[in-house]
Image 1: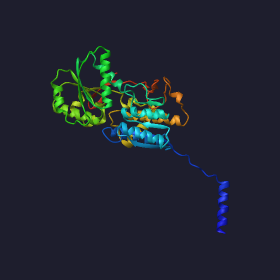
Image 2: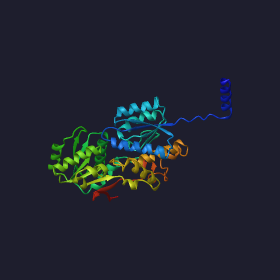
Image 3: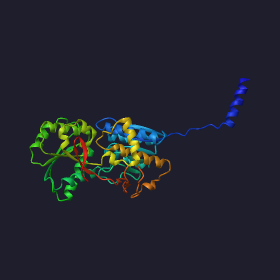
Length: 363
């Protein structure tokens, strides 16, 4: 009797109560640097994506977060896993230039969208037909620094960390110097990421006939190590860098000498985020604190997610991201992409530190 009733009940439910099948969440591959010197930056990107998946995506995305450790080998392995096992069609994240560049051919061969919130193509124009970088190419930071120094210094020492990013910045600065007839005499010094005690090299730089030193480091950690050792030896000459002097980490942890550094950088975060993006940035700061990374990766990552969400939902097409197509209603100031997928629209500027705060020195 109970069996008959159960069968009748099931038949009624099957006919009159449609079964709701929940759609599978859309998978997005998220390769980030979550360990190592750039872990703080990678963690900020991860937090931005988790927040935006909640606020903008209504948690409809399955964010497959992987730590690529800024390792090319690891990044390529993760790319193959995303494609072969997870069957993703979209990837988003990419803290480091080198891992973005190394993994790009893997994604391009499988026609995967790549949206980078931080990593750029360095001095390579394109990384694939669906590869878009929402962070301006770093080499323009080197170009902007050269523009400022040209006519102000005659002799410059460049202390370069032996990483792909810093070596590219060194190459870009020197290329710009050559382009203008080598008005700046350059002395080159190198150190490995594992080299912590740089006192002997810094003393040599201090005693050399230079007008200033360009600290070409790869991370907040490396930069702080150098600026502290320069402070300890009483380095008397002008100091320059790209990005790092203005990070929250440097402002809170670096010695007084950091206040004398002049640097090229993107506009401050509050000037880099649009009116539309301020609400979500305020929510980010309320939950996770003010971004501290030396690179302003939170606004660019937020915008990369926003565009990907529009693309997935069909409100934006691949053609809308074509060269020169203006995007004016996002979380960043109006921008477009060139034919290589590089973002265009906002420029590096010269900054310095005044009363413990980053201030504009020259547009």
